[in-house]
Amino acid sequence: MQIEKLDHVNLRTIQLENMINWYIEVLGMRVGDRPNFPFPGAWMYANDIVMVHLIGIDGPEGIGSEAHLKLEHFAFSASGLHEFEDKLKAMDIEYRRVDLSAFKLVQINIWDPDGNHIHVDFAADE
Image 1 (cartoon, one colour):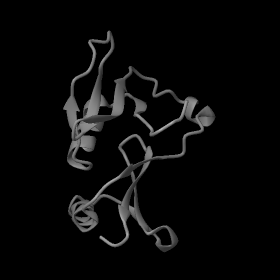
Image 2 (cartoon, one colour):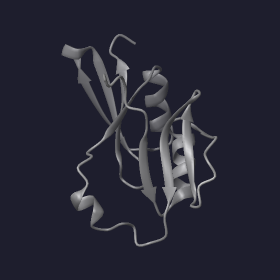
Image 3 (cartoon, helix red, strand yellow):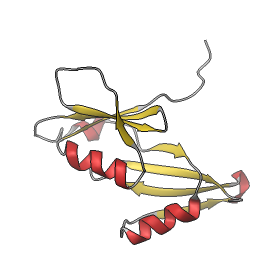
């Protein structure tokens, strides 16, 4: 067996609608097909690929789980660096830009409404 690529990330949230809207408005994803699970949620797609599974939970927020969760961030590759930075500025979304010239990458670090750290990677020569 050979691992090829990360398939998706699964996030639990008490603010499902807010998270859906953020992934649509900020990252340009869309809600797509999802099995008829007996719990609320949404599968968020970029193009025709499911990238993020959102699971709606009732409070508490899972307090304590993040003390044991070891995931620090997840990342997407993208194009359109300048348009994305302009969008973040227009939406007044805090972000941190990291230029990794040795790897010919620019990372834009953002945080969703639940505080999940995401970086979006762009080719430095864009």
